[in-house]
Image (cartoon, rainbow, N blue to C red; front, side, top):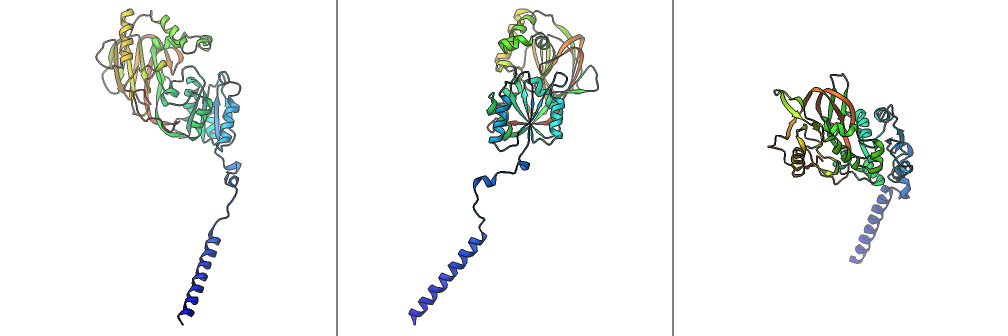
Length: 350
């Protein structure tokens, strides 16, 4: 009798295992070829490229398009800047056409123009540097290689950064700046650096123009910060920065970061060669206090009023002679794509 029960139990166990196996097989999804998981063309994310045709190499479009295909993105919407529209209209068109990221392929001027339309949209801006300065690119740690930078633009982390807004001589329109705006010596360098010299010698062109501009005289300005009392100062240059890093990695504003909700201000007032030597030492050592020739402040709103019109610049773009600049910070207004391992804070403004 015990032998019969053993066979009955064995039969029940076999039937139970068979039933469970059938249920599992019915519940499994069929294994498909890896290509079956690729998104339909209509479902792929859309990149747009705002490109400065004067500065991009002949194969840049092909290289960026290749990275997009490799990463499973749609072919990029390619929008070239013009002399009349250096990037603002193109970035606006990209947003209107549903771009998931707007890749700016140009120098600091192209980046600033595109940002003018991207502020407040939450559409991320990627950066593929091809200009001379590329100050924002270097601050964020974006690769300088086209292919590597494009990969970051498509797959990097999103970071919300502050932008500066500047109104010139009481005009209604405000202009975006991402790095620095100001008056005096710095603007004279930008104004007097020929484009052909930048093409020939790169960033060294600014050094050559700077040596020529050192001979100028100090002027008087009135500075107002937030709701504080106006300050009278002699100056060679007043700079307002969202980032504090200059060409060559020199840090002019040690406390500046891109997402701290304030703008940094520095007034440089050297007199003669000895004064410039003192200023250079302060910049190299990153000291920010205690010297009459180099003064630092932080504020959310700034007004710079010159006794006589001064050459001025916005992110390196000369804007001519100006009597008054009104500046303010717009916290976290622009989303940028950064490398996955990029630091979130540091003395270089990143």
